[in-house]
Length: 442
Image 1 (cartoon, rainbow, N blue to C red):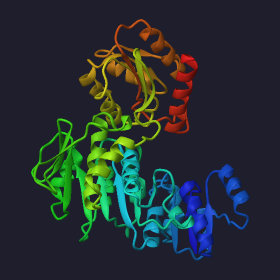
Image 2 (image 1 turned 90 degrees about the vertical axis):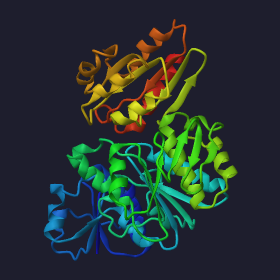
Image 3 (image 1 turned 45 degrees about the vertical axis):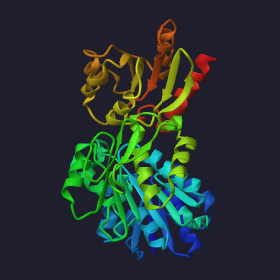
Image 4 (image 1 turned 45 degrees about the horizontal axis):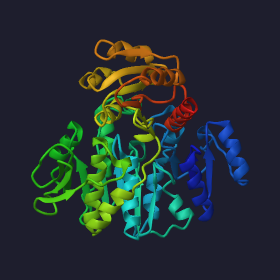
C-alpha cells in the first residue's frame, strides 16, 4: 500500500495516478480545508494521520516537496521504516523511452524550462513541460501525453529524495543563498542541487560556471562530462557570451552566433544563462540554428519575471516579483538605469549591503513589508531610501516623484524577499503590483 502526505498539486496528481493504476493507498494533509476539498473531489479516498499507520502495510510514502524530510511530522513514517520519496521518484519509475531535459538553479530555471520547451515546439516536436512549473510531473501519464521530449523544472526539494532519477540532459544554472531556512548551511543546499547530474553514458550535463558554487562543482567533479557555459568567463572548451554573440568553443571552434534580434522577454544579462542553455540543448537535439534564433525572437516570457507592465517615453515599469532572494534582485538591476526600486517582504538572507555596488543605478529605493526597517537600515547610508506603509503607497510615491523627471525612469519591483509576510505567493504579490499600477495610471 502507498501513502501520500501533502495534497497540493503534486499530491493530487499522484492520487489520480494511483486510481488509474488501481493501487491501494491512503492520504493525509494537515489542512482540514484541503482534506475537505479532496474528499469532495475523490469520494473513495481514505485519510490517515501518520501516527495511525502502524496497522497498515505501507511500503512507501510520497511527501509533498513543501515539507522538510527531517520534520517531526514524519517521525512515525521513520519509526515504521517507510521509504519516503518526492513525486520525482514516482515520475522516474513511470517514464520509459522519453528524453528528459531537467533544469534547476536558484534563479532563472522557470524561464529556461519554458524557453527550451518553446524551442522544441518550434522544431515541430511535441513536448511535455512541467515539474516545479505548471503541470505536476506525473500528469504527463494522467493526461496521456505521449511526447518524446520532457522538459522539467526541478527544485532542490524535489531532488532531495528521488534515487532512481536520471535525465538525458541536466542543467544547473546557478546557486546562491536560498532556502536556508530549511538547509541551514549553503553546502546542504548545494548537495541537493547537484543531484540533478548523472555520469551515465549518452547523457549530457550543462553547468553555468559564473558563480563560485557552480564553479566549485565544475572543478571538483571531473568524472562528470560537463558542458560549461558562461556569461562572463572565457573557459577553454566552453560556450560563452561576448559582445552580444554566443561563442561556441565546445561543439565547434570559435563559432559565433549573434543574439541581437530576440524577444523582449529575454532582454538583460539575467537571461543570458537561459539563452546559452537553450543553445546547448539545440545542438544536442540537432535543432538547426535558424529554428533556435527564431525561438529566441518569438518567445513569450513568464509573468512576474522581468515582466514589462508599461513603457512609454517617460518610464518603464517592470514586475519582477519572482525575485525572492538578493541575487535575483541584483541581477535584474544590471539591465536598467535611473531605477526607482521597490524592495521588501520577509527576508531570507541578511546581506543587503550587496546593493551598494549598484547605488549609481538606483535613484531611490522604497522598502515595504515585514523586514522593511531591517533592509532600510542596511542600505540607507549608500542608497536614498524610504520605508513605505505598503506596496500601494510605494507605487503612489514613486509615480509622483517621477512625474516631472526629464529622463526616462525605470520603476522596478524586485523585492529580494519572500512574499509570505503579506501574500500567499510571489504570483499574488506580482498580480497586486500590476493591479495597483493599472489603477494608478488609469
